[in-house]
Length: 277
Image 1 (cartoon, rainbow, N blue to C red):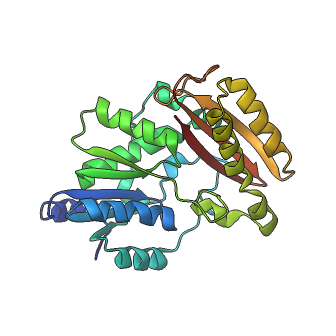
Image 2 (image 1 turned 90 degrees about the vertical axis):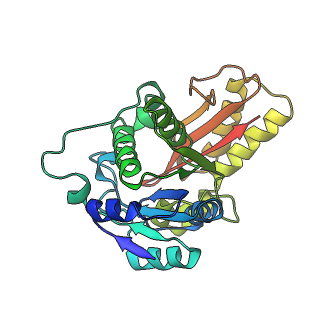
Image 3 (image 1 turned 180 degrees about the vertical axis):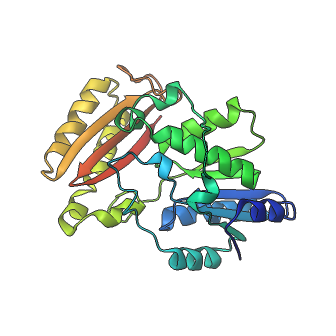
């Protein structure tokens, strides 16, 4: 496994990689959710490239950039075991040199949900993903369904900018008690960790109501909210029932919907979602 730290070195190596190239962008502190993406990439490509970069431009001024968990030796050991070929591990100065002043934005899809709560977040995401795509030039790029809005935004960017790659979406990986795997789960204290699976329980409740024939979004939202509010450590940021393509809020679910949420446990903000239909 080769570890690359500069863009020129990555560009030089890229010219000699066997096609197709699968790419998994990460912020490190890897878990089984990330590993599922690497496994999928390994099964579908001759070469697998993984990036590890905690991107400062997708964090707000009061968010957790400085304390975001990092453990490069552990990450590299996990990736080598899983058969990754190349790890791209650039510095901030490498990705955003002095005088950097160019941004990539996707408009409508970034306004609701996470965009409403974190106004500058997606500008940072789309800019760094665009840069990484340009540097790595993957055939296939792998993302997790847990970040449902991010997946839609990246797909839209790739389509609108005629990027010659396929965005592959992989299922959310969960802990045995249903909590979606996330690098931020490490922030939870024991009591918060015990409470956090209420997110998945509320999503399963929504699924049960939908399968039972309920199509009124307000009814489903009310029952989900009631369930989460029974957990005193949970503080709801938002719960949404939206169109799976546009993220427009739905009053009535016809055939499908994305149910997504953000909930805080103390200072830790967790997101989760489920696709209906």
